[in-house]
Length: 52
Image 1: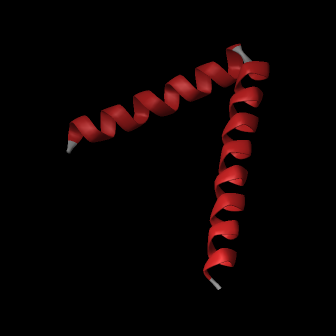
Image 2: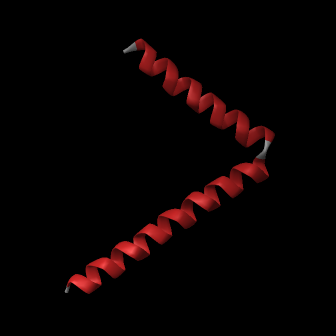
Image 3: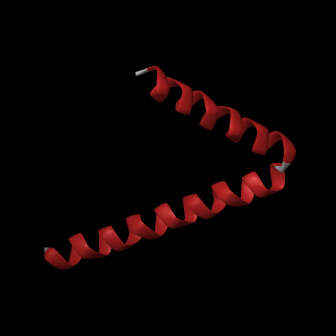
């Protein structure tokens, strides 16, 4: 259990460091992830619509 907590804190520290050092890159990463999720949602909606 302590290893899991350490990995979680290390990941959070890395994200914080990345956001502070490269805010533009972090924004692009979030934008890319959001666009990917929107694409998945659109595809899922089209699939469900075709089922009906």
